[in-house]
Image 1 (cartoon, rainbow over the protein chains, first blue to last red):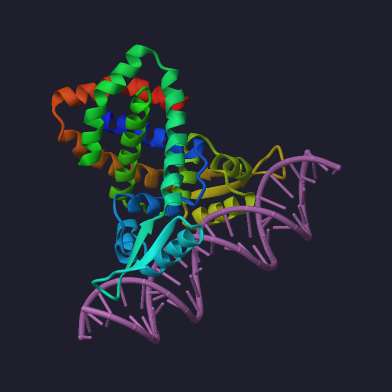
Image 2: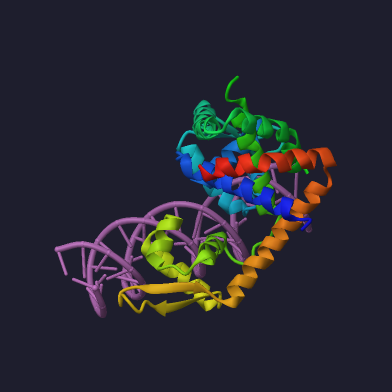
Length: 136
Length: 136
DNA sequence: TATTGTTATACTCTATAACTATA
DNA sequence: TATAGTTATAGAGTATAACAATA
């Protein structure tokens, strides 16, 4: 069975991701958190955010409204194009991301503590290859 | 940095899961597919499905209704308890699961093809430990 | 005329509360 | 009286269509 490695890896990654999602209680709805993550690298227009998240422009308007009301993002006019709006993270937005990451890492740290040294080393050795898969 | 392994593994698994979800186009909504997966091992009552999926009983009633209309599951009365209903997969339901799995494995197979033998072996060696993490 | 962003409206998924049938 | 399942109703997220402002 040449594809059993693919199936096994797919299942392992999906199961672990599911556990991470279950164990960490998000402060905001998943789709709002996802927008926040995309704003981390750099501010974006709602249009671009809608494309990245694969939702309609009106949906993204709603999401940005919610995030703005929560004080997690801010809107600013684009100086070079009057049609556009620039959405960016506030300090509170950055803090929420950091808090969520810490919570998720905490579950994973405990899970890795249950392994022995040999198992941890096997995972460490496989990590570059795993990231290569994700980069594809 | 004692938790960098945890962070790295968490990111790798989440990134790969995200790619799998993006690359495979599901025939039905994600929450309906998830119910189907839980019915694969054995038929279940709507109550139990609601608990597993962490949704309310009325929501699960709706989901089961949708799946039944699509011909993917069937309802049957429980012979030993007149209050209960037993939901089970139809052949069409099993086929949809198989088709989706094949599609997802196909992406992962191509991704693994891009690796060299050494990298594939490192992943293979780490798999038992990864499943142990997921089992936690 | 095309593009960005928003508002208007409808549909879907979700939840809580209330109801029916069975234990 | 408690539990399984459903129906009624409301709230949030999404989409398409229509509109305003700018390029």
